[in-house]
Length: 102
Image: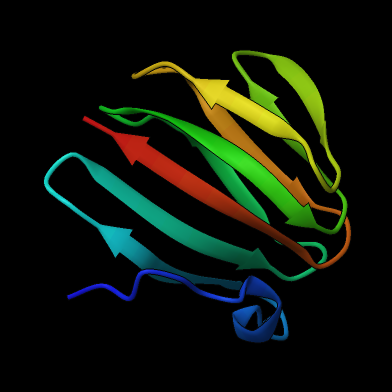
């Protein structure tokens, strides 16, 4: 069973030069994952078969969604439709929630 709450500031951690992910909640219809990207880390173009959203918790980076560069700053909310091409680059240590929905 998934815990009903988490203090994100206590579970964010960064690797030296990579990406860490922690599944926070998973149900039949939803999957919520905490991602922490070390500064200078990139995730190349990819898609998802599910719609979802990104909510930036801390850091600074660029989220490219269908060719548009969106600043990843604390408080930024980004909605993605399924099969949208997207990529990410962390300019400094950056953490965000990714929620994918069926």
